[in-house]
Amino acid sequence: MLSSFLFLCSCGSNESKSKITAEMAYEAVNNYCHSAYDWSIAKENSSIMGLKMGEETDSAYQVVFRSYTGALVNFYVDKASGTTRIVEHVPSLDIKEETGTIDIFDYLGKENKN
Image (cartoon, rainbow, N blue to C red; front, side, top):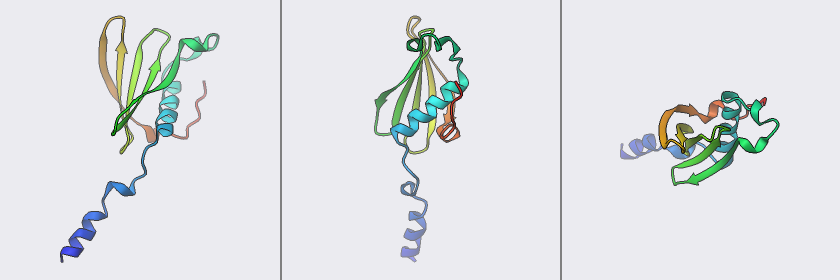
């Protein structure tokens, strides 16, 4: 009886799920940013907008989008689930605001059009 219980409990472990990689996090956030933000301003000067990897913790990757306005949008990608918190930061005004969440699996493998 105990062995049946242990078997049933081990079936739902998170080890069976694939781990989110830094490359997956970057690709999904890149695709999201190209669909959500207007990149036309950067066509003539690509250095005014961009995306880069930020800090990594044991549980999350940070991907940072820099807008031409100077605002930073921080994406915190949970390594286990792919759920991503979005926190906008305007350094010149010292304003931070959590603005929502996305699931990176909704943006993986999608080609950006900008």
